[in-house]
Length: 370
Image (cartoon, rainbow, N blue to C red; front, side):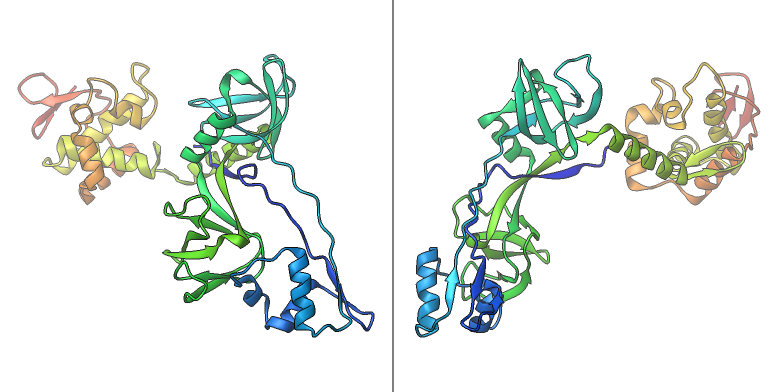
């Protein structure tokens, strides 16, 4: 299974950054704006927690009033408004190839998956060049959503988060500037927004230490977190890691190898079919399952053998699923499964079994094997 990567939908909220760049003191030395405010307010947290907002002219006048009209001067430099990126969302059930050029014959550079989003870089003749995570390339417009449709889907499948804009932001227990302080967060920290928040609220409801808390909306940007695509290289790295993890979970029992899940599945079908039988009767059922792995008439995995249609009735009736959910397979069933995996077979290469009296073969307890 693909490990999803998160991507911040920066186009949902536009940030206008008007920054106070530096403060020149009368002595000729320079200090940062934050340093200066710290001297007035004993730390950035107090400034950030203020429940008033000022434009740059008002703030300049306020600082001059605090300093009693001294010769300290504030030099203000505005940064330009950031451009709003246009959102695009994949409109697919499984995966969508991302191409190097706007053509179905072009080299594949990555993939988008269901619920993945990105930003539009360029559009051309029914194709869109986009960026999603680290993958940059072209996708057919037939499989994409734009505009309101894209934003609607992003809000449905994405996670709403708040990105902190300043260091030392207070987290409050209530939506009030006088509320108890639960903690502090710093610039670029990402907070999970609860469903209680609505666009335009003065306070953003967040999850903090597994409880509901609040931060002032003046000092965060609420964004939508959606999944991103993968480059071809990332896909290869992920698949290699998944295969290594799968192999690490496999145990060699001698004759056969099995993962923890396969061992559990084998022990559970033994419990369903022979839970009240002798140890040999249990091993025999496991041996039938494994004998089928080596026969071309049957599938080549333990899971596929057990769930093959019309073969093991507990698998088709739902009884096996219930035993798995309730983890009812006993220790003796697990021991029998391990014995069968090691190559032990009281019934040779038999492929079938049923209740005695209905078929000729090797009888063990209530079953005849053939």
